[in-house]
Image 1 (cartoon, helix red, strand yellow):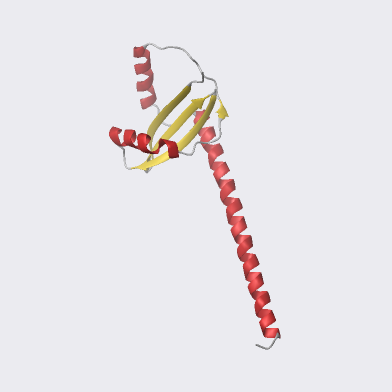
Image 2: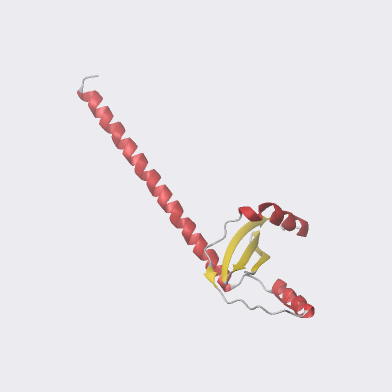
Length: 138
């Protein structure tokens, strides 16, 4: 049975509050970044997760090491407190976000290139049509 682990880190990155969803499944990490804007309340974050989690676009999976051990509750509390103090996100998460950003950039480039070429082709056909009409004496 595969174990799936999800984690949400909310932090302030000038001028907005950012949420980073990390999902570890089958030893691979995928990440999604969400901009909240103003500082979200706990119930707002919870509501967002319930309503929008299935719509999030996670990055491509990056291999990561997963430790499967049961932890002492006090130790978990200490680690959570330490993570809350810590500013920023993990390097693996940053790599996954960068990979997703590059992928979306490539998609945008191909779409804009196709639009540019179709517009150029349309203008060329218009010029040709205009030449034909002039030639015929209309």
